[in-house]
Length: 274
Image 1 (tube, rainbow, N blue to C red):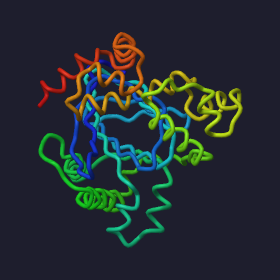
Image 2: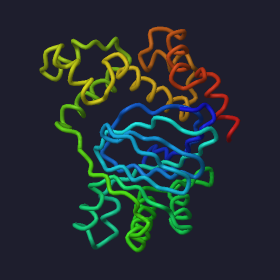
Image 3: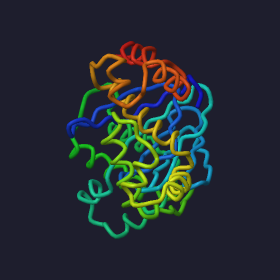
């Protein structure tokens, strides 16, 4: 991903929804139970959903269905992306057409935004303008949904989503790694925990994430390290060892390879944006 791409995403901490601005990093194949709302404020984004590539351009929203495997792949220089994750249940609790909405949101959608959609989306993100609770987030996501349903002609593409098969094992694996990041996680440890052979476990991870075992572990370590850089006052060395990197040199090398800057440079850039 281009170094001068800007991603403004919702940051969840203690059930309070705020925001964080990051610059120039790629997001590897991942999935989560929340729906992911992606708004292209400027530029272009290529995103892989379930192994298929889609382009989202300026003024469009992509809504990635829950449990869909996806990854941000490439952007144009200067691209600005707004990202929010919302549980479907938090939208349904404020609307009556639950069955209809559930059916719609089983798909990944690409939508041409109206001015009102853009306004609601930015209220949902609330970047740099304050913080809001989960209830308010659900209300704003519901407002956005109503606006989309009221302007069906703005839906440019329905993409049937292949939800991740055997999500229980993937969730268990991801949770195991997150709980043991400070340890030297091996393929044998993960395979034993899941009751797989090491050979099958290796193939399973590759099939589900499109990453080999080491890259998948490092992607989780990087995600956790990035969150600590954003939300904590821990020093770089403590973050490196807390997230399982064997040395500060290893942390710096892998972080720069995938994020384009060193952890110290990244931390400094966050402070300069406040």
